[in-house]
Length: 118
Image (cartoon, rainbow, N blue to C red):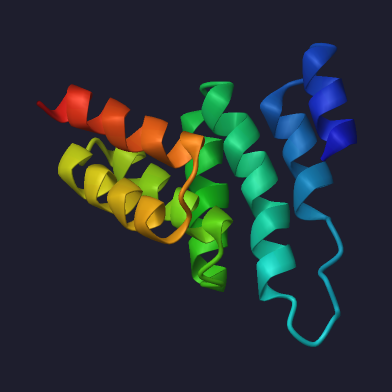
């Protein structure tokens, strides 16, 4: 992931760096779902904030398919409806995340989505 981001910062195209991310070796530990969801959440987050929405959607879907129940999973579950423009579903997902993982980021997401959806 670091190499892919460095290449994008240097001007490489999204298409040229996606194989670097996708070729990441999977975690072979017994219960690897949390570490796997965190690993795939990293490119999802990076592409979301870089406004590469289609790439962000692909990686968010990958995180939610793992279904670890981790905060990364819940963030991806919030971003997918947000990407689709379903603000009520995104707001509900943000509230669900905040009820499980209390933190400033979760509170910001809930407040921001409440403001946007109003």
